[in-house]
Length: 350
Ligand SMILES: *Cc1c(COP(=O)(O)O)cnc(C)c1O
Image (cartoon, rainbow, N blue to C red; front, side, top):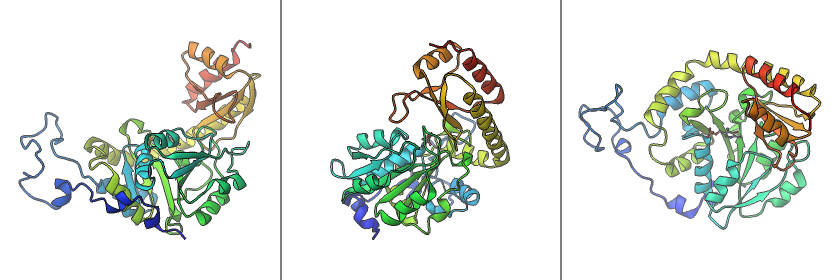
């Protein structure tokens, strides 16, 4: 049986969160002398002298509309990387608890575990980059607090079978974190509509990829109100700055141009995949549900270096488990993709 109280660290259960001036007085007043701000103003045209809303309600209400998830089920982080870190700090006792990671996958799950001194149990994906079931179940013990599933997965690009994720959600009494950073490019649908179904579900999304706002650092976690309340206690009080909150709000009004880019990126992705498949140095083009393609080549390092000389930077993933010979290539604009393909056609074979 899933029981949030059993999963939480004792110190977090007992934690009295920092209470900011903005927490203690809500509502409107004419004179604010409670936060030691500079009452004279800010040296910028905008009133940045005031602390931002620690709970980012305006932005959450807007996201709630777009995502179809109530605002109380949304946590905002300084990138989804902060959400990952806050989850570790809320649930995992350093040196005692463990999490399960399924490599090859996003590197921050491991780095964040190491920073928090959390034991990592790795259960590699199968050769077709899906969850490997008997080993996955065997890896779970009474100290397993979380399992991270990245779908679509970085760096492989594929979605993880929905039924396999549902299997975990139904049978694992810890937290199942589904990282949907690339969900906007996927054929598979999001899990954020299933929050009422699964008390152990946390879905991560971000404004950094499809939304084109990597520099603003806004990531989202969707979960039960109970989980959201806990991670809100653990987060730094003003973790999303005022400029990022305002710009994100503005950006969310531009959903139609973002949707148009997503359509174009998907078209370009499929063109690129077809182009890669024609190249003699390409051994395999992995199917992608993301805005990048994993390509197995005869000589990843050599191709990488020759592309760098042409001013084109891709990601060499050949040292990563199950990815020998692989480059991860982000989909560019149509012109960039044509340049990339033509550079690859002119590679000197080693
Ligand atoms: C890029 C990426 C993120 C994004 O992190 P932000 O901190 O929100 O920029 C999260 N997860 C995966 C799998 C990613 O590839």
